Image (cartoon, rainbow, N blue to C red; front, side):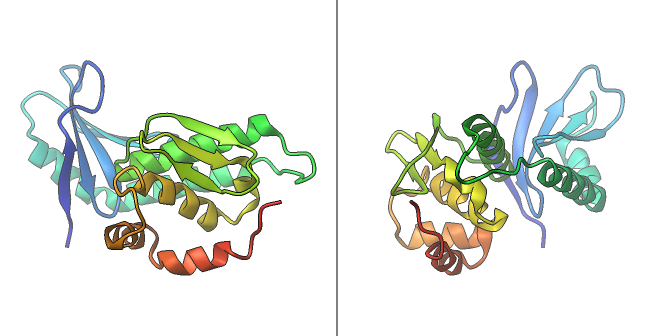
Length: 199
């Protein structure tokens, strides 16, 4: 069964745009455009999805069009992810490139926040000795640059962990339920994290 959940009324400046959570794609931006002559879908490099809706076409029609293109969209997303992983910089743990680590982690948190409809305030990339990540009461997120040495699924686990904290400030049942919805077995991934110790 598909799921539709309107996230916000406006998602782009100067555009009548609605952000909608659609399974299994995540957040999709439906933008009414006077310049658009036909329905079109754009999958961007940051993995955001935008549907341009011409005058006289309803969002319901646009959503039906989007759903008919889900296989193509998922294939496009997979190609982008594959290309990004191929271009992911390789790091020497003894001489980490802070600039590249910051660029990569900034890109990834923005991708995941956009995909799942999260908002955060500021992002800090630090060389921490005791934490992989943290989220403040003001939704400022800190990520450890050493995350780039972890397997991709664990990188995403840590990043999503902090993004979920923008909605649930503790590790209660609602927090773990939200994490399980995003990553599957969240506590199983937490156990895997124990294999990687910060130095």
